[in-house]
Length: 594
Figure 1 (cartoon, one colour):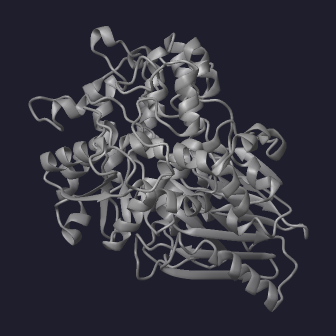
Figure 2: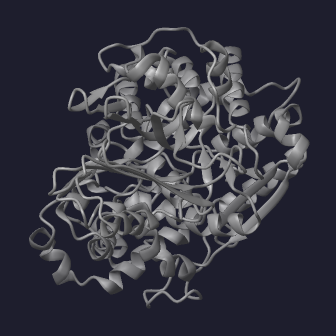
Figure 3: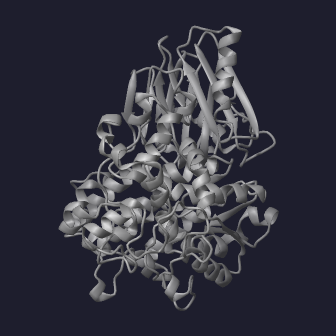
């Protein structure tokens, strides 16, 4: 991933302003530590700054990038997987680099603002047309890459990959919505991504074909093996990451990357010592014969990193912070090995109804609507986590499940096929499991292919979340929580853990605009607020952990009444898995899942 900062409509071109732009851009350098570039044009009133993570064409692909005559300039954060196909379909252009992102400038020269709908990839970019002094900014359909939009008191419009580059110089800023383009010609935002499956009023009815789904996913993974640098796969041992790993391993030999970096796939896992994910990941890695790297952390390691995690992820959302911390710690280790790109399994649960609360979906219509709500919110949660946790250390994460073509196939399937029917042996994400259940040429061991869903923050070790709650209980008093609505009237925290994260967030980002970028509302096992109505018992057990799905998760929280809830609020597990003393690394007792 790279970092971009753009200031459009500025009238200040003093040395002090240039220095300020460079200073703000430096706040994004963790995203792109390989090179920095700045384009300035007084007539167009623009500054385009770029912090590069070199993945494709490391030697000559520095940004900003230009069209042949250099009157169109663009700064891009992302990867354009169909850049070669686009080049073949376009008229001839003079290219300055072999960067996949340069095609955007040339394509814009041919088709103008329609360029955004023709790109297949993950991207955020700002493009300036020096011919008429206009500009556009755009973000990929799902929001895999982050982008923020702000306004300065001098009338300038700002765009940045992270809000830390905007928070001190913009009077107001907000999240740039996925699937949208901002055009200076029209003076605002418009949605460009409107596939048929995006409407909640249309229930799809395409019959399920395992082979079609399998081939579509294989293509999505293969597409993301485009790289000029060392890479690997994040492997938790769950279904999603294991499918990514097995497909990548199976087809790696056929790629150019294998000729340069070798045909043995590297895989990476993280967890507390003895955690479910570490055991499962090792088993998958052994089966696939990957070069596997296992990283462990302690609860204290995680607690020490919380402030940095919140600074980099720019959120106070409980689920995101729980899951981002192990990913943040693992990424630092991965980068130390010289790896610059990884594939990851985000998006599957949203597409296929994989979270455990989907067991209670009352109908196929409700299930489909909930998957759409989850997909449309990915940019606030899992996409944000996967991107910013890895970009904190200059690592790029690619997500095959959110491939545009794959989603078209997966979201067209009759949602009745996604319904969970335990009496028929159809557990969550059954259609994806069935698609890769090929005994004649197996992709994965059967018990891995049908392993129960674990949320990442749970799978790294149940003591991790329990430890977070205990630590927060010693940082936040009952009186503080009682008066939370007065301290934080917007998105008022209702647990000590949430209050603890909010305090740290406000230290890093005290602006009103900053706190407004974070979503709120009740959740059960990562559900939207609307899905809580599926089970009356959930209303009294609100927690984003998968273990809150009472009657579904094999290691669910004990559904005891008030005492169990009170204990959790105090940081004491209902099954006494750890001490009530302040968390120090050695007070936790590991919990098993098997």
